[in-house]
Image 1 (cartoon, rainbow, N blue to C red):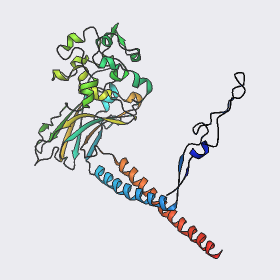
Image 2 (tube, helix red, strand yellow; image 1 turned 120 degrees about the horizontal axis):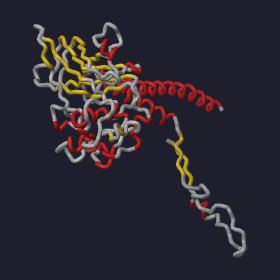
Image 3 (tube, rainbow, N blue to C red; image 1 turned 90 degrees about the vertical axis):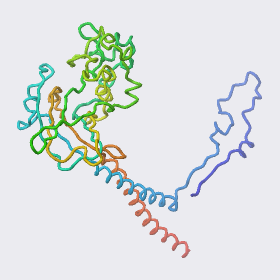
Length: 370
């Protein structure tokens, strides 16, 4: 690669700074000092792009990116995933009556069941997600509507939440804990999975609710005021969010260590999504035996406690069963992006090579004739 350089050291010796022969009363010159920096004479290096350097770069990028993209795409396609939309917008949907009658103004619990069949078994650990569509968690006012000091267990913030939580800052003249629009809109559907045996017996699939949140969130960002000794006393003098049915210290009646601000379902929800269609981890189905699949092929039933209305904003609700790989969950976009960039670079390299070969031979012939 050819490069041009410039050195200002020799030139600096031929120029002297502005003289001051006029004495103290002389007018000061506005001319910049005669230095390499102010006179823009610093040494510089400028690469000159030639065919011998550009073409190999295009081919190398293409040959590296295309195999990586193919590997990522194949790995993503090998991830098994099954999705169920249980919004209940169709009349034939088992959850149609729940979706039609349930609302925040009429919060009567509704129950529905969705039957489905897995054609292929799911090996290793299976992750159960809930998915929402047309839900904009990235709205600026929504994202700011929280009090991180309160969520970190600060007692002063517990009784005096941040004004960013308005209009979900107080309720019935008491501070709300946790305050804000994010906490108030907590996803609260209950999903229970059953396997249907050949004789019709329903076998409940054990769902693990611990370990679904980020470690840093669980142990650093979210803490209960005063620890976990007596949460009823710790949250005394506060009120639950408007749309919640029970206070924060009763989110998990089966596990006292999973209540308050460190409840993992709550922590997962508080990490807002960047896009209006997203999924969040709900439960983990752990593999118990190396000889049997985690979820065998066959018939299943999903029992749903319908508590979260979405039709008011034209949203949709989904339950997703998925395995993972070394690259995480199913994500074909990453592999497609690598393949696309690599193909474009390789194609440009071929085109530029043809152009260079064609016109470079012409210039060489013209030089020989002259």
